[in-house]
Image (cartoon, rainbow, N blue to C red; front, top):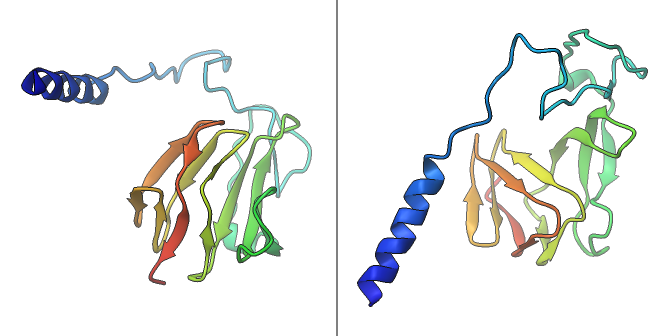
Length: 150
């Protein structure tokens, strides 16, 4: 019985890794499933339809003492450079957290994407190091957070 359960779990994991990706549509009309237009950026506070925007994120104003809304006050604050935002509340930020950063288990009320540019962070049982990526859907409980090393 146990071998069948393990086999089913392995097959489920294998199937998950081979799910077809969302079809790319470079020639489309801009109304695809992953449409992120309507965002504003630090270099153009108004929405500029159908225009590329390039900028050096090192030149963006850095907000010190920043923390995720709802995090306990004893969690060490970090810094943030807000890069894009939308009226819906969606945004993209470059965040720096110190080596003293530790946060308890909890959940986010909106989707969260993490891409590690430098260092490493432990999120529950998972460790993300340089170039590691995670997508955490809204409402999914995650384990405690901790910066690892520098």
